[in-house]
Length: 151
Image (cartoon, rainbow, N blue to C red; front, top):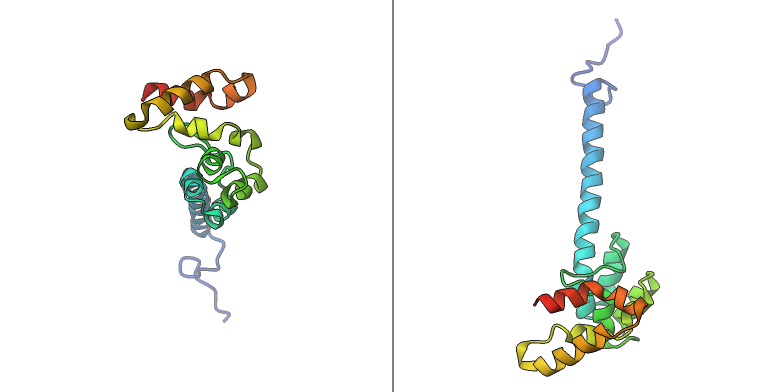
């Protein structure tokens, strides 16, 4: 007599249970990819501040948005340009990945809007300058400006 596979014990069986397990594994894989992308996107501004070009490239390869911003609405490229220069490794990595090049315009002033109280004069000057920007840049930095005014 031919041996028949027991569908409950045979992992290669296409039983409904196995199909359900495959769907769950697939869903878990999708959730893990989504979580990895979200974490990578949140890390981008920190990596830019550290001029960590390799880390930026790795985060972007994981799906991070090259135009990612932090809770202050300051984009990664803005930090890279302000703290390390518009031609820094971090800025180059972000631009190569498709970041909006305008996010490096007036970057030092945008970051200075968040200067500590000990640098109140720099902060005030930066706020005034960013408020006076023309429509394209003002729109780009509107979230950061609102966040700086709320601090």
